[in-house]
Length: 238
Image 1 (tube, rainbow, N blue to C red):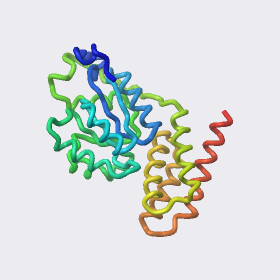
Image 2: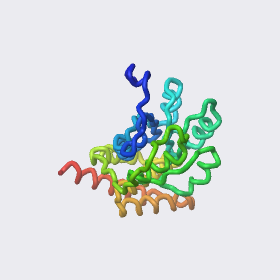
Image 3: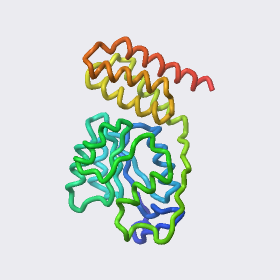
Image 4: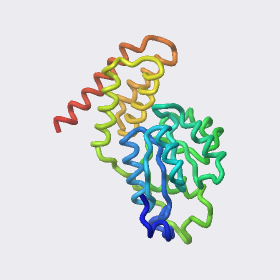
């Protein structure tokens, strides 16, 4: 909950902390990406809350009104496009509504649903993160004067990455098929790209191609499962 002081006064943004006074809701299922967003908000002066499903996001929005909402396009209980469309049409509307995805093919669908902009994953560049939000923020809420554009990148805690891999390994152990496997491929592909794990990213892309073509994904699914387990085993050994 916000403190009484937070509710009474809203701190003014500064050149070094241009998002000071803003509250960000990140609707994101990956703990690794969420940790990156937390660090970006911390460095920028914004407060952040997280919802890992559409259901949790809608429940949160019944109680709180954030300044900025970041919505992942692929979530466990559906596409983020529906939530974006609802928020874009709501009154009062949130100040900034952005879509996020590691799949740029979702860009047009996100903007058509009503998103102000699109953040391509991995989201790690501090200057880019701040600029995309400030670009769509009302002028009265932007910092006055000059702002130094930084190229700094955040490095999320690898424990969050291990949590994502463990969650994926748990689902893969049940030999998922159909929609569940398609969601898992989307989730794991985003995690792999955010972690700069090219071999895993390429293996997941291959799985995606098999799913799209209607071919049997079982062998590739098992290969991806083995790769995920190998990374977990190595993480535990450190």
